[in-house]
Structures are given as C-alpha cells and as structure tokens.
Image 1 (spheres, rainbow, N blue to C red):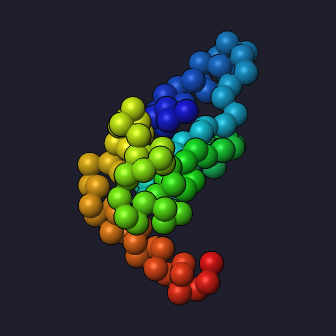
Image 2 (image 1 turned 180 degrees about the vertical axis):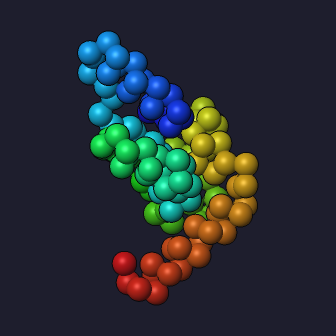
Image 3 (image 1 turned 60 degrees about the vertical axis):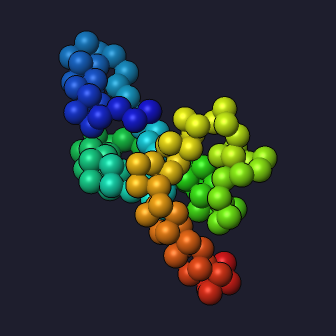
Length: 114
C-alpha cells in the first residue's frame, strides 16, 4: 500500500509486457484529514487502469471519533508511549491544526446528531 502512482503505472506496464497479473487495487490512507493523495494522485490512476481500492485509517487512528478531545493520555492507542510512530502518522507535523480540524468536525457531527 501507499505506492506512488508512477510506480503502480510502471508495475502495470511490466506486468502486461511479461503476461503477468498486474496490480488490481491499492490500499492508501484516506480520511477527512488525509484526502489529497487519493483524490489528486490515485483517482485518475484508478480510472485509467480500472483499479479498486480499500482504504486504511478511515477514522485517522481514532482522531475523527472525538475520543482524543482531551489529549492523548490514558490507555488509548495514541496514548501509549510505545505507539509514538502511530501518533506521528495520525497527528502529523501539523498536529495542533489537525486537532483543531477534528474538533470542528466533531462539533458539526454533534450539531447534526450523528
């Protein structure tokens, strides 16, 4: 998963040239906080090659559920010190901005009753 579109396209070319099975799907991260790669890079590729997709982290490792409103302390996955790598993926370099966006999404969901 998470291959660059150019490599997926190249894998298709090689597979066709050698009568092999080409990739049929990609498994990218995709959620409200991480949309650009799928929508800008992969969507044209999916249409061009007829690829399917199954995504990972649709709730941004729990950020989009609102359970981290008070921070990352406690027994949650992002609260464990041995999961710093996961916190880096979920929160990213723009951590505070990302948490502010989540708070806005959660407030909207609460307002809509969903």
